[in-house]
Structure formats: C-alpha cells, structure tokens
Length: 236
Image (cartoon, rainbow, N blue to C red; front, side, top):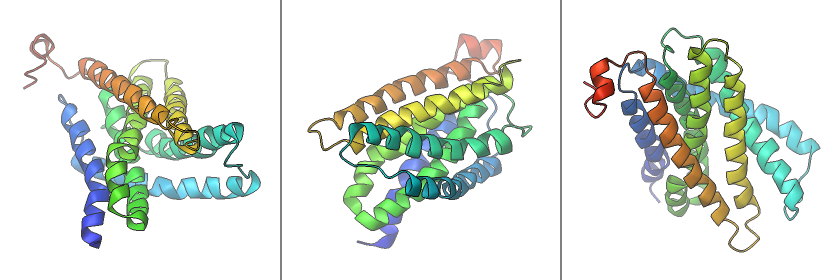
C-alpha cells in the first residue's frame, strides 16, 4: 500500500474534525498559528503518556481475560493517563494565553491538542495495520478522541471564564477520562460477543453531548452581538 495514501488516510479525519471545530468558533476565531502550535503540543503529549505509562504498565500487569483488570486498564492505565497528558498542555500552556478569552476557546484548544495526539497515534496504527484499520479508525477512534476533548474543553472554557470556578478544569479531565475509559473498556473486553457495541454507544452519547457543549459555548460568547443572538444562523 502506498505510504502517502496511508499517511493521508491517517491524518485526514483529524484535519476534517479540526476544521469543523475551528469554523464553529463563529464570533472570535483563534490565531491559526496558535491552533497549529496546539496540535504539536498534542504530539508532544504522546511522549508524556509514554513516560507515565511504561513504568506503570510494567508494575501492574493486566490479565486480558479479566473484566475487573481490564477496567483498571481502560479507565486508569489508558484513559486517565492519556487525558492527563493532554490536559497538562491545555491547562498550563494554552489556558494562560491571552487569546483564550471566551468559553468556546476551551473546546478549540482541547480539540487541537487531542487531534495532535490522535494524529500521531493514528499514523502508527495505520502504518502498521493498513487501510482497513485506517477506515475503521476514521469513524471510531479519531472522532472518539475529539468528543473526549470537546467535553474536557467545555469545562475548561467554563473554568477560565466563570469567576471562582477554576476547579471545573479538573471536572473536565474527569469527564474526558470517564468517556475515554468506557469507550476503551468495551473494545478491551470484545472477547465477549457483541460487547463492542457498547463502545459505539458510548461514542454516540459522547457526540450528542459534544454537540450540546458546542452550542452552549457558542451562545455564551462575550463577542456575540444582540443581532447574532436573535439570528444565530447568520453570525456575520
């Protein structure tokens, strides 16, 4: 299989999702350079994940056929570590930036970081396993990473813009890890016939909540005018 084609298939889903989120930021869009920088922070977050997870996975072996141990694997050893690795860069690099000045920015930056993480992860999977994996992950893993990020970013935006609610950033981390863990868990225990549908169900719920989060933060923008509030379909 042509390497360029595989690389395109690996990166295209994230690019489409990233553009979608960027265009949803209707009223005061973020600088492109900062969005691109955020993407590469996401790539860097994979290094943080490896630094944390490699020694922990060595210390805590997992029985692949144990439902309990796979829950620990999914929620703590994978989801929490990966989401925390992304959270570090959103909370302590992007959050203080002067351009992070409205609730929706939390979604933009969290998604950008997450897509950097998912992009590198996707390249590794696709280059190793081929076009079938690329197509499967195009409709599952990459959108899943985006929904986790939107949920985290929703709370990150509230934490930044609502006085006295900085703790909500940590709520966002917890929610993202919860949905990520649920999604992974059903894949990890797919030795039970049909249980993988739970992962698809969790993804659908995540997408539904993500759409609500996007709409809520669009309407909460301090840059929206009275006319735009009355006619949201015509923001300009």
